[in-house]
Image (cartoon, rainbow, N blue to C red):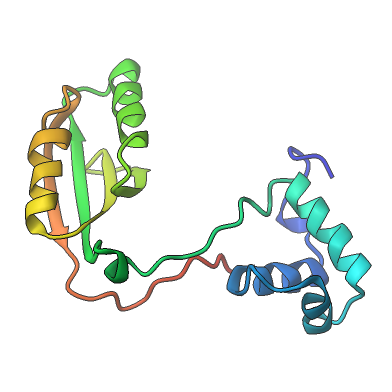
Length: 160
């Protein structure tokens, strides 16, 4: 399967079962995966390698509890740029890639140009990031921040 030819229509039911399990339990052994999806270990291995080659399965990660590492403040920040020129957007996006506290950055349609998900240890730490780094960037015109009161749902699993 070539990367540019692989799409959702080529996923069969076994591929989908494998993806669902791996999204929940990335550290599952090949033997346990085979049992759970009702396939042979060799078949699972071949399918996983094909899904990796097609960039359907991306990097392996372990999720970290933000509270237990001192990053329990979750902020949604909307950003409006001063200009929509390609070089201005490129400078901003390059800057965002260097900011470890920014977990997600989405280019948006509508009133705001970008939506950021930022984690911080406390309000003071976020204020420093906002006032010094984000609003100090020459591409940024304005922003609005919303602080999460509770995490009602959080998932990294894509429905397949």
